[in-house]
Image (tube, rainbow, N blue to C red; front, side, top):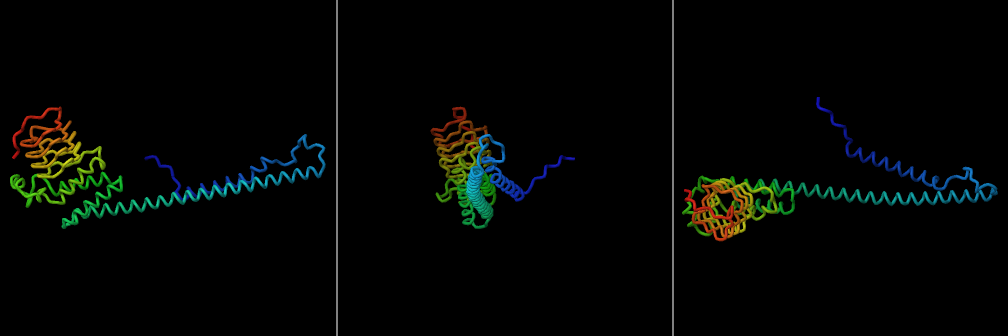
Length: 299
């Protein structure tokens, strides 16, 4: 049989026991300390030998007055201590209640915003994205969950290879108007922008999981994608100047016609399937310090 865990008192009972012990200690101090400091004259003392009865009475009276004064001082000090302790406990309880209300609000906001991402209306989905961004700004505990939810939203809405109405050729997308920034829709583009803009603060130790995505013609200047998993993601015609791609997994990633000017690919993992054909690569920091040979276009 597994060992039994020691029984723990409920928090209310613990505080009750602590309060009882504190009261007992206070009563003991008030009753015992004054007689200990000003003892009775009944104890034989050579200095008291030969004193008259009146003198002994006066000394005894003075001793009792000293005890009473000390006892009153102790009671007042303990009263002040109790008052201060009560104020501190009330302040701590107030902080706990405020934190609990804040946590409840954040949890409710997270749930509602996450539900908004599955709404049929694009406007509602965009509102959910901005709500999640606001939540991550106010709650450090929610930053990584928000990053994971937005990344999952992008993966669900813009997979590669595309299907249905998103199934368009690169030439059609590249020749589209400026309004057509992303084949998958404005909401996906906003979610992607939100991710790459805040990833450094939200989850710096874990790269974003953005594998097998259709991110053609994405507009992501200064994107923070350090350590990101971009395997087999299509970034045809993407605008990625000064992108941080240090340590990113770029195996099979297609940067055909992409703008990578000034991007940092130090320690990035590239493969023969990584396509930099016709990409703008001026000032790029390549893995190992040297640019890989041009690779054939991936169809």
